[in-house]
Image (cartoon, rainbow, N blue to C red; front, top):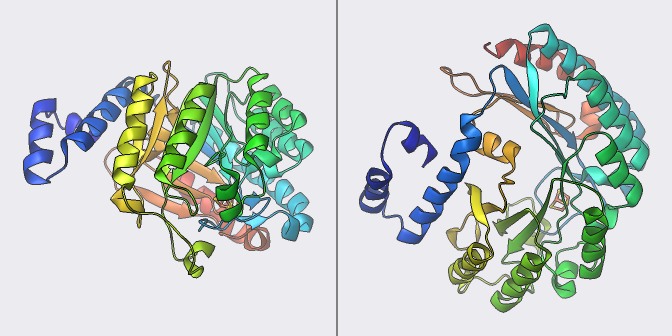
Length: 372
Ligand code: SF4
């Protein structure tokens, strides 16, 4: 939608093209159009000569059954984490120097993973202080730290985030049903999520996002709608609804009794979307993955003008993202060349082993590719 609009097509022409040539349903066309409209203002204000910085913390307290990322459980990699934090800080400083040398600033910062709040408050504080000491954050538009697992959220960590400039966090229950949480291997309860959310609300974040997943094992359409209703009642600025996507690397694929429901998934999502719209939420970014339940999509919803800027820039591929840390994927977006990607080693151990010869060298190569 965004690209067709940019090519100068009117909404009517876009609708016709999608309806008649691509057989897209009216419902999905409207969803796409609304999303593109909501993105326009943010994309119009895209600053020149600025990039987004992605900081990868590839550790989680346990592995979710549907996860295909390379995140490592904190317990088994505990001894590695202090070295990882040191090297990551080194890479942040090195990257900041390279960008400053070319007169390039930072537009948004995003700490993702994994679960960044798997680290201790001191470790988080150290990394975030390295970011603020080395980058000019005075005109930053957004600073997100994912606090995905409610069981990792503490007052000390939230203080570290907000005191170092973080203004947007994500606390993700995925579902509010304990039986479903247990089935997907998340070691927290719904109660822990509500407590973590209440605690986070006491801090002055400009936006809190809540991630949900439809189609989880042991869930039902009615159960999912109940989750959506309960989350809407909390009135967070952002709600992101994912349709379950199962990759080969996920533990769930190995489990024959995975009990994933597929009937009525599209109806259930339509119903959830209507509930969100009625409650005043608007879609602001949308993307699809392989093997998604019922061929559905993931949609980020916002209320009150709190669209997540990094998510839009990243999904629409309109801005360079410089990634640091293991598993980080740097994406260089120039006006007239194809997108170029530079990958850091996936696993923390490889990242530490080939830090000088691979990580730093690739960073020089990547930053030199940015056209200013
Ligand atoms: S919290 Fe996210 S990254 Fe971590 S194991 Fe679960 S799905 Fe994977």
